Amino acid sequence: NDGGKIEATILSGGYTNYSYKVFVPGEPDLAVFAKLSFEYALWNPDKSSHYDLQRTVCEYEIMNLMAEKVGGSVVAPLACIDIEEEGQKMKVLVTEWSKADEQFCNQFIDGAVDSRIAPKLASTLATLHTMDFEPNFNEQVKPCMLSLFDQMLAYVKTTCEEMKPKDRTEKQLVILGTELAMEIANANLADYNAPDCLIHSDSHVFNIICEAKPSIEKLENFGPDGSFVLVDWEMAMAGPKGRDVGLALSFPIGCMVAHALAGHLDANESINDYIVTLLDSYMECMTKAGKTEEELASIMRNIPAWTGWFQFLAFYYLDVQMVNFPCDSENDRKYVKDSMGVLGFKLMRLAYDTDYFPEGAKAEQIKRM
Image (cartoon, rainbow, N blue to C red; front, side, top):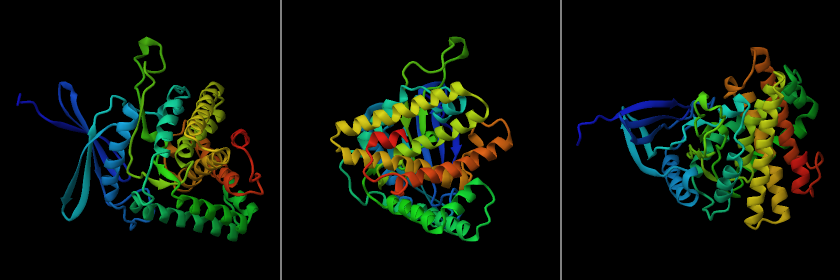
């Protein structure tokens, strides 16, 4: 009514969607976030793999529920709109605009991590994981992801059988042998299909937004509040315990390898403090929620499984996000990528191979290893 214009800027062009800031220039409070979702996922090498748009409707529903329960760590959704252009169907999700505006991944790249975020993230995830749920919630996101599991299993089997390793990762698979390596990979697949609780399912640090750093004149690393927002809920579903915390650790641990190559010991101390705080805070939340010692041990065992899965599949096999690691050279980046393959499969083995680690191990024993 005042004659102002609405403008939009592209925030990111992702593998499954584009996101925008829609705003009125000169009015900082008049802004919303909008995400345009597609029927396909470019992160999947199988380009024929369909990615059901019902996921955006479910994203709206779970964000609405979580925004009521956890306040500022999940933004409230405003609308979910159907779009069709030249025969292609899409959906637009509109949410409130978050004042947090920097990807959390940057702190791990820089090697200075705001440890205040760890207990807040732990509490948010624990709230999600202890809610009542329908076992089939958003299950239509699974087929696209399951095709990646098929590719992973085929790669592991072929590598073991051909016995012509090209790097340390493939050498490890050959040494494990087809039977054990496939047993671990198949256990991971079965775990993905376990509807243990509601999960975000894509909770890596690129989907966590935190306060931007203060101006350099203030000589402070972090904003005043230590606030964050967990975003991109389109893959939320009923799924395996441990997956969300595991994914949240995958990139930070990879950054530790990169920082170690560069001799950045202070960076690794900061990242390690964050990791330990996140694990301890999450397990404390789950204890307060009434989980038994046996359940806590099972959760802790599952966490490294999903850290390892993301490192092995996303970083090593798919080469996703590798460009973001803080490497000084291309050789270092190749070394980190190979390290993610080696470490990723070791962590999966820790979770699923009972000969490697005793079945009756307590949560604290597993965390220490």
